[in-house]
Length: 137
Image 1: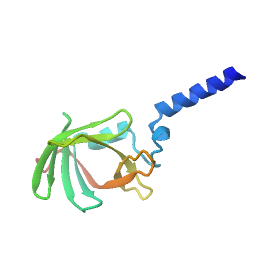
Image 2: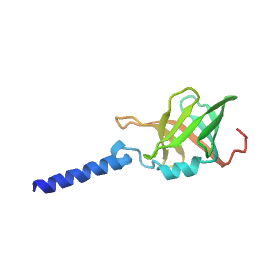
Image 3: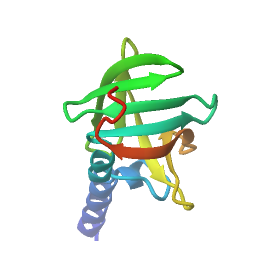
Image 4: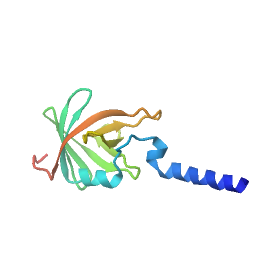
């Protein structure tokens, strides 16, 4: 009986560690690594911050660079997608921030700050994804 308990406990631990959705209690609709790479890689993305309403155009290059135009100012940085499905941005001198992206029930896409207590906060809404860099950012 003790061996069965230990086997079950081991499987639960492995499942919790290997599944970011279960381990971090991500919202329903959280996108995975492959989906994020397909959406952002070599695309220009229009987004808006939910708190301040700032609109940005950002080009996510295949080499991992980000070129952004926000409020008439150009910003530069780097992007990547972690194995656990978080998209990470490091803009200029700022620290890297890694977030999840969720497809909401109405089909809209939002980026969330992940909170340890499970109360993840939406911070960015995505409006449009265009292949390539038509604005030459």
